[in-house]
Length: 184
Image 1: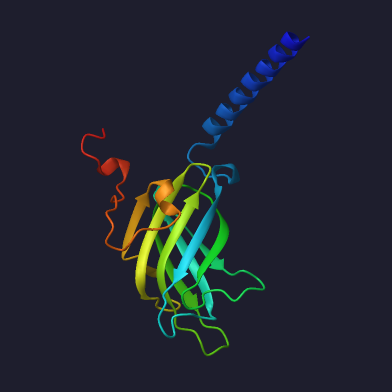
Image 2: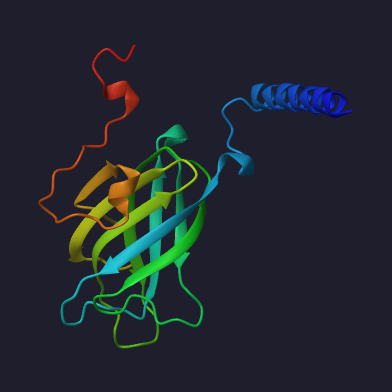
């Protein structure tokens, strides 16, 4: 009986894989909800006087495929985000994984504390063990498009993403596959 169940399961798996392949061929290069993943986004606010903000903060993610981008409003309801020296965590659904850059901007609210200084941003995906680090260490310009870009943008080993190293720590440069010598 167990052998019979194993054979049935194998046939179902083969059928599912062939349907998935047909779907991919029909969709071509279009991005669907299934292509995306949930990412952890951690943002550190500078530890200087006046660095925190009450304004609405936005993260803009740029993708290599089709030169697309997504913009996310970062807000944890019920929490006071982006306080001086704080690290804030968000879970966001990115429609692609081929991230090539990131930017930050903020939109004024109805409070006095609206200027904002970002130290760094981490983008982590535990499914693919992928991590990107954007070093800002600067004041973010408000309601600008294009946004304020990271001073340095790197892809890190996933294990190194848990606690980013010092600003002078050695890092790998982010390079597209096509930029590598002898890629084709």
